[in-house]
Image (cartoon, rainbow, N blue to C red):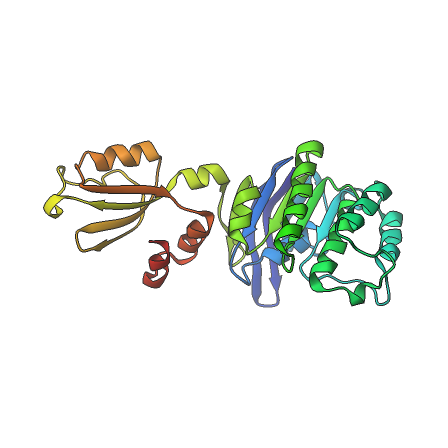
Length: 301
């Protein structure tokens, strides 16, 4: 398990992380989402032990990551800004990784380079952005990490390669109980593979929840009553309404509550129109990041 408690980081007068808490359960995939500049890459660098927090603690199975070589041996990192030494081939990089990671798996390395059709003796500087991502993935996954940190891992990859990457990750989570944190702007893809979601804004954790529970408890609702009058005084009484607007006789709402509770409360008003749908992860993110804005609410409805 990865545990982050009260992590704060300042760069001069800029607060990059603000008392941030985050938990990645063993054998799960955690999706970290937020707008550009929210602090996603900064917290990943802290989790990798590259940066030291001003306050707070980052632990892997109870052990701090900062200046802890034993813990870092178990961490795989694929950053958004990849770097390979000038003139190096994938095979040159593999020898570096082999010397640094005791669990290096040479058989897996060759299987992955063959899967992605990567020439092991070709210089990395001649690779496209997508091919460099595939090379990084081949190297990191061959270290057999217990913890995997991914910053925009599928950026630049074609759909077929993206499926191969996610399959490999999901298989390792299932077979080896690997714990994964992934930051990506591709929310549709995140929705298909993540167990937990954290929404970060201005260095703070805004929302952290099991994905199924998150989607199951937030609903997009459209309601209309005959002549604009419900059969009860307030058909929305007791509901956790996050957003409401009216367009003619139709009420448009975002409600965070159990589906059964929402249906029972609104049905008591005898609506002539009642549509209720769970929000997608993308819609939930849009709302959490600015759903009160009229232009953004138009995207949701």
